[in-house]
Length: 420
Image 1 (cartoon, one colour):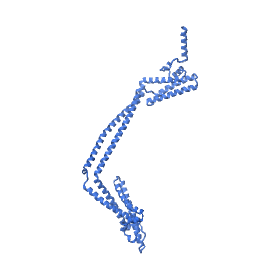
Image 2 (cartoon, rainbow, N blue to C red; image 1 turned 60 degrees about the vertical axis):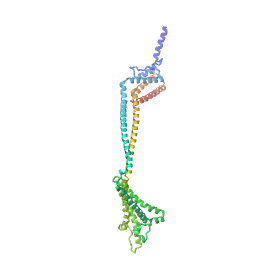
Image 3 (spheres, one colour; image 1 turned 30 degrees about the vertical axis):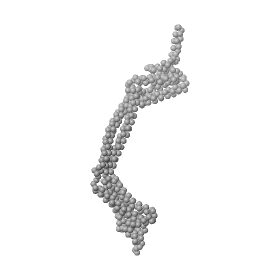
Image 4 (tube, rainbow, N blue to C red; image 1 turned 135 degrees about the vertical axis):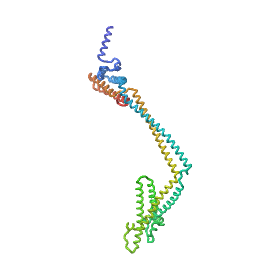
């Protein structure tokens, strides 16, 4: 019996001397001795586990859990680490309150807009039932009728004048019995002669009157514009029209002058701009077209104005319908705003929920944790070097440990939401 006890004691002393663990208790011892730093402890544990790779990883895992437990107990440290997250969460909660308030304010606007739309619809129905309530006086109808008659007559005049004048200026060959100004600018056979000469001539002299009518219409449209630039545009159109009329007048009077010169017994000078400006026929042709063109433009403007007055019912309905469309657009924008705010609120609530989970959990200082693990690894590899372990074996241990540390640091950074 005594011999058996001596053998047992000898075996225990031998195990302690060689530091070979008999069970897993050595791996599960959680706390580092207060008298040692992590590098010293790593050196010691390396000796206990003979530099085993598996033992190293298990020790690192135990250090991770021990560190978490230690951090969890350190309330002051936890409060410091959680303070930025608490501040961020409070800011997000305040932002949610502001957005909820903004949604309520936007919703309060919708009934007002809907009420305005309903009132406008009722106004449209009332106008259609009783249009006389907003109808202008009868003079507006008279003005429109007279203006329309004058405009029609002037349009016919301008068509005849410019078709005849353009034919005379560009295509007509004058004879002695056709040198009168009246024959040149009011040729009753201009269209038929142009048709006989070819389709191109016909299209040109028929289109020419619409060029000047179009210029008159542009004057009316420019008058509707705002700003000083409209006067410049109107003036430019008038100058262009005058120059065009002057060219037609010059071409016609030149042809008439040349016929007279050919059949005169006196030597006449060549026709030029000075002779044209001194010719009564030159100015007669210009004013027969240009002045009527200006009158057409003014009459057209007044006629449109009179039409707008008698068409006040349609305009009133159109104006109210435009208002309805504006209010509907505002309603749609309000709905879009509310929908966007709700999405932002849901996103903030999700972030707050995640933050609450982090705040209720444990926040670990990743820099400190990284330092502890590397110190332990340094002590472990130091033991391996002292005990002449192969360098490849030491490198493998370092590589596996660094991989373990890297994975755990990234996990902690994700859990902490940010690197502390």
